[in-house]
Length: 346
Image (cartoon, rainbow, N blue to C red):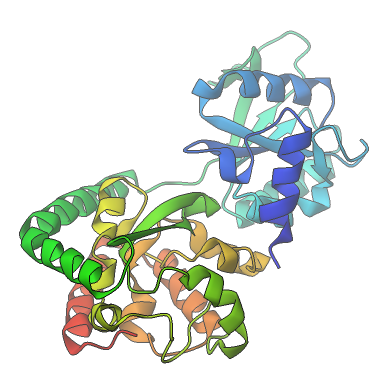
């Protein structure tokens, strides 16, 4: 289970000054520093006190130093810690072991992480163009290419599509909100924490489809869970209200998430966001689905919605991330419209 990302890293952040790990890093790039000697700590200290640099230090990897005081693992732990901490970049601080440095570089490339080298230049400066962090030069050894233009277009699609949908559907949204309120006591909008990109929690909005004490009743119903893996759903859920069943059948309960899209917390298309209690049950291999913004709809919703297997849903989420394109988003949105009109929701 994901005891590392949700527990170990956050506990480490509580003990040490490197507080930028997993859930507190906002839009920062998460960084692991290999080497906890004077140079590595100098880099970390600078980044901790200069958040405007856009880097958040998760901790150090060091094969010689004792665990604690920021050292969260050995170099052999890179893959596990990088995935659990949603690491974007590795900084090699004056590595003295050439084989270890090559091993880190190869592992980072497999994990699609950027790699920077901070060499000990004895007061000199490298001839090639470098970045400086607190007076320490960082030489780029590997950088993952980003489809910046396509990502910008995806965001434009999200904002334009989300805004247009809110304007066009405004009368229907008001009517649905009134029906929810008349059907059962409680707020019209249900807001709950969900795991977003890199596991960062955000308030996800929905029309309320359940009774007020639904979250408390969930634990009593867990033994009836019909989904496999860290995902909860049962047929004929007794917590769902009459209007709630109608909204869920046609997926109209998800419409308030257009606000999440406009806020940049979600996209129109992407893996669905899971509740934090489900997220806490993730295993390490489940985490890649959180590499992107969650979506209002996704590949699983339009191809295997009735499949109870979490692994099947995970495989489709990973397939979407690896093969993502704007054309794929448009196809999923069109298929979503057909699925909604069929009323196949639960």
